[in-house]
Amino acid sequence: MARHMERATRCQWPPQASRPAAARLGTSDRMLLYYFGTKAGLIADTLTNVSARLASKLATLPASAQLSPFQMIGAACDLLADPEVRPFMMLWTEIVARAARGDDALREVASQTVTAWIEWIEVRTVFPRGYRSETRCDRHAHSC
Image (cartoon, helix red, strand yellow):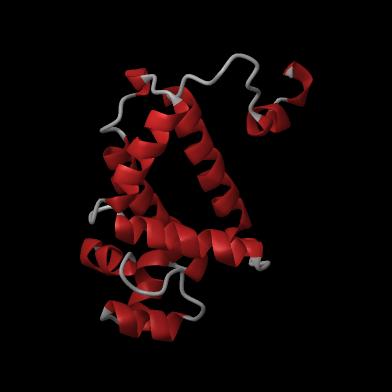
């Protein structure tokens, strides 16, 4: 199944329908159902795998880095330009775009992804005095 998850980062993902997705992944829709139970299970397991692999790439810039905003933009651009990261970013871009177009099944995944990116950036960036994260305040309105 790892081979299929690897392919998932290279094709249109997440799938709209099981049969075309299975064909693109080189398997049958019955095998997908056997291993994952549902389309939601397939998507969740694939995204978990992809998230773990992307997290290992993101860990190359430790939380102790403490970069200026300008340096962070450079570091993020370097990371996004990495050929190993490109398939992951294409996948996450598709997920966020579908969520924005109203795909309720992906809305929570997209929200978690965007929040994780913001937190990854904020932990590694030294912002000017007075900076206030709107995302952090939205999650903890009582503390801002």
